[in-house]
Length: 287
Image 1 (cartoon, helix red, strand yellow):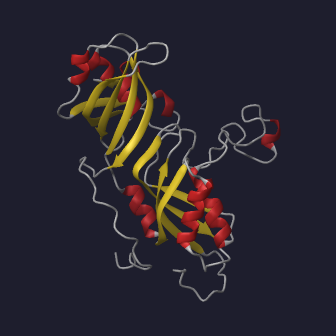
Image 2 (tube, rainbow, N blue to C red; image 1 turned 30 degrees about the horizontal axis):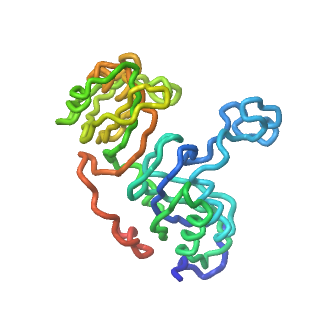
Image 3 (spheres, rainbow, N blue to C red; image 1 turned 180 degrees about the horizontal axis):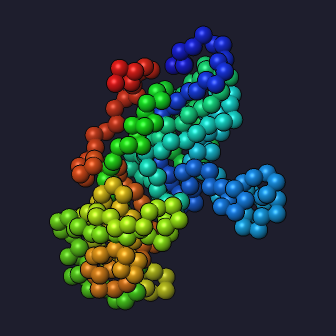
């Protein structure tokens, strides 16, 4: 068992950093605690809150909580911070080799922790919802590193169209990179500056899919997109806020009804190598 190097005596204000990757297999799981925007989860204010009905949160749990409950019990602390290398929307699955994260455990009372056993327990408890990979000790410097790195991503999108589709137009989506301009989407306008963003997307697969239950036509895409691209709006166009959009190119108003992250890529869309074995403790001190 690899344990944290320490004298075994709890240190006031100590912090431990554990790194890994997560795969999110469901469409109802936020990355971090989803506190109610009205009561903020406050113990007193949430009692009369109509929006969350006194729960204090808008989701049952999160990646942070499912990972933090197991690590917190092992390290004997209830406090942690979750740092992700980006994040996906609640209803977007994170597949492939997963997304890098660091859990910062605050004031731990125990340091003799078997991270392999923690990883197995997290996966046992959350089979079919969440999987974590490669838990290992890391350093505080990794938090800034994973947050500052820029990565393109590969997505699978199931798209529903408002009008019958021309198969030739759908097939023609596959081709060279498309330069687009995106205004800040309405769904994030409360926390993002209102500005135009130049991004690129590249469709590598486009084909008709089985129609929806009501007969509405659908098609499926595999798309590579630059870091910071709002993929759902790149598909719908959101009333012209993204130009050009997939909707424009296929000649029908379209909406992304399912979205999966298939891979985290390099900044220019190149495939990243398979993650290396976990580094030994202290490997980042000389960086």
